[in-house]
Image (cartoon, rainbow, N blue to C red; front, side, top):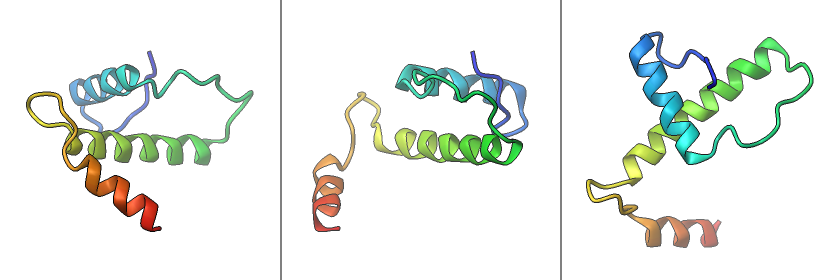
Amino acid sequence: MNNRVYTGLEADDRRIARDLQAMGAFDQGADDSPSYLSQKLESINQFITWMRWKGEVSVYGCRVGVNRSAMQQLAA
């Protein structure tokens, strides 16, 4: 599994990494040798994606506001 630091809390980092793995965030092949800055930016990007994903999924596992977000994407 990916051992990136998202929050600095070991248990939270493992939980976030598990959720990202379930979302398929690590399915893509890794670059040959990414720079330190690009690794940090990617970690931030994945953390933001995880936060958005957690906010969109309701208690029952249904995405909340899918129609609204689809409308906003079409308008942009």
